[in-house]
Length: 329
Image (cartoon, rainbow, N blue to C red; front, side):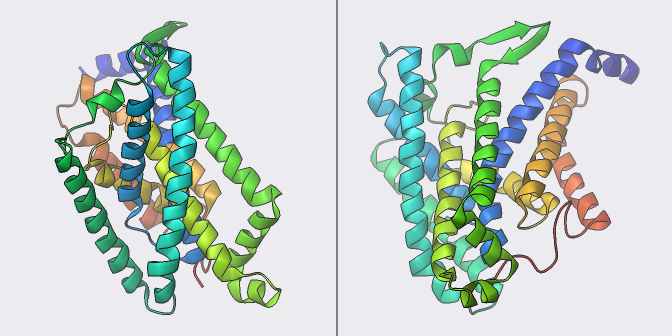
């Protein structure tokens, strides 16, 4: 039975579908985790509110789509509105992230990390409850996916297509493209801009960067704000994916894989985050296929992701590309 299933798995149609789905999950994971990596890489702050802010981005993006899109709206227009929604959500969450850093995080820089962890965890509880209250006012179920937002997805992203015998979801292709754009954009920002140089200098040695005239506190604020903005943009994309959807539980559903990706890749290294996202995404896709076709255990993909995390911590505690002493102030 196992050999027959393995033979089916290794066929071009099945293996190709698994690879495409794995790359799509990798793209989502890198979009979700990149903001978390930027924040820790420079500031040394483990932001437990990252998942909740991703969830807020999903709802804000859905709000823009539901407000601007009607039944007669064409696919091209819906896609254009979606990119407008991403930009708006990124801008709003970036401003919110800057306000959180200056008012809540900054006073705790000189205190032990446990203060920041407790603060961001408490912020998660507050954000989740505020969202529940708002949804209750409008008669929406907080634990159910927002179907009205899902319905704004263009028709061509709903229909699968067969390419060389491989079943491809166009939404998966769309997610892969956005993931690549995100990686290239962050890489270009960190390596090709003056402010990216400030960020990398601050992550290596914040005291020396300050001595050279760099306003490290301002850099901290910008990085935290951009990290939260990226989380919101990722949430806007998740709003269209039926596997995720805009709901309050989305906060926990995104925070867990984000931390796994960041830890496996190495805390504070963007290159490690990208590589780890591919590893985790492909592993998740493979295990999901086996769960659906052979192994009757609903928690198999999540269990294997934890095993990847545990093995990494045992073999290479600093992560795949982690460097000791990087991050923080």
